[in-house]
Amino acid sequence: MTDHSDLHPDTLAIRAGTHRTEFGEHSDALFLTSSFVVDGAEDAALKFGGQIPGYTYSRFTNPTVTAFEERLAALEGAERAVATASGMSAILGLCMAHLKAGDHILASAGLFGSTIQFFNNYMGKFGVEVSYAKPTDPADWAALVRPNTRLFFLETPSNPLTDVADVSAIARIAHANGALLAVDNCFCSPILQKPLALGADIVIHSATKYLDGQGRVLGGAVVGKSEVVDPVYLFLRTSGPTLSAFNAWVLLKGMETLPLRMRAHCDNALKLATWLEAHPAIERVYYPGLESHPQHALAMRQQSGGGGVVSFELKGGKDAAWALVDAVQLMSRTANLGDVRTTITHPASTTHGRLTPEARAAAGIRDGLVRVAVGLEHIDDLTADLARGLG
Ligand SMILES: *Cc1c(COP(=O)(O)O)cnc(C)c1O
Image 1: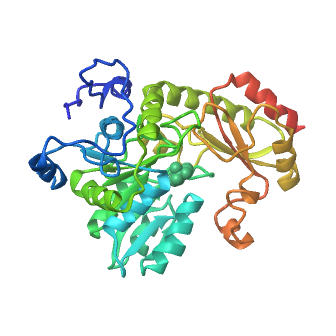
Image 2: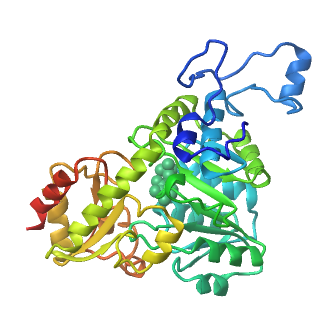
């Protein structure tokens, strides 16, 4: 891969990973082919054996998928990225490649719901222990680490309460205890936050969110040093949850506008959060870009913007929250995020609905909480839409 270290993210998002074929196509080519033809018996033997680079079968690698991987690696400042069918298959690949029965995962409390289900129900079934630490308190991580802890797993900012974790401090604790630190960077994307530069070993992406940016396809990636990513690649090519060439191509197109979109998401979200904070029906707003956010200073040190997700509690509790969700006419009532279209959800009855009331309370998800993933519509139309339901 070309050395891109002197280029800006805006340029990398458009240019990194492009390999023109003999036809000179200007946009990235889409290789919809399951397998590749070799020149002869010896060529086949060398390519299958990995002695020479080259394409054999799209479960292993595909040129469109490689272009996506190279572009994402360049944006994260990483040696290597390997693409996966979804964000969850990135987490599956990471765990299958790096953990074994008897190991322990120390993860941040309040992770994405499917990640918690996967850790508790499936990793647990294969003898991997999991416990949860407070994302905002590095001392809690140091206290909960065990001799068999192999992986620290962190989301920052968290969903939906936007808790911000100190990546550098938690990385130091992981490394002092011989563990790897993986950061799920889905909420910030590499445009707002570069976990590897902060000391993390691995970045996880759900490309389904901001990397696509327009709610079209699922995808994911594991990003980091080759020595950490190579074993994940070997697991994926053997077991199959790899990214389709078509989805990789859609993601390449999406990423070209990622820097522009992230800045616009941040601008809109800050305006919406500021408006909400001044509204009499609102009890409290959770947004790292607000000075009232408990980790505002840390967020502004390790992120270049507050991100696109704003959560808030209504004074009227569940009834008021449901009335708001029902009243909006512009925002989409759906749990997806990272889309140009603004979405609105009531976490306590949807994404966190399967938790027991006690677990929900422990996670800080109160009945009056609403999450808005702010899109790119005009800010005045978004505030007018919320005003409809706030009375
Ligand atoms: C959506 C999401 C995932 C899972 O990604 P999929 O592409 O839906 O599998 C993981 N982590 C976070 C923070 C997410 O928002």
